[in-house]
Image (tube, rainbow, N blue to C red; front, side, top):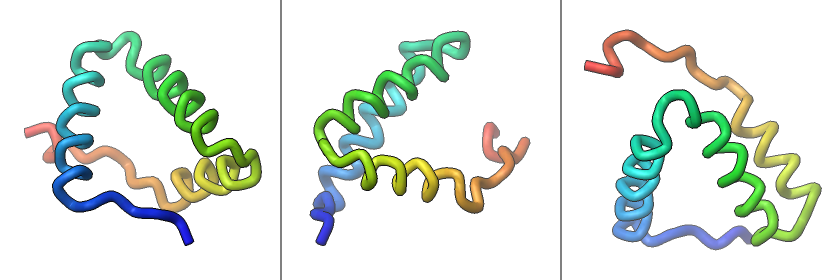
Length: 70
């Protein structure tokens, strides 16, 4: 069973992630996400689990909506 975050911790991490994405800026956003993923993969330490997470993240990935930025 995969441990899950407490909702308060999830909210704090979401806010910190949003701040870090803004700090990285648009031109370094992809690099930031790739580096973050690699660091988290190192913490997980299970290649198969990491590959499954990558596949799950791509599955039914929505197209950004113009209304989402407003």
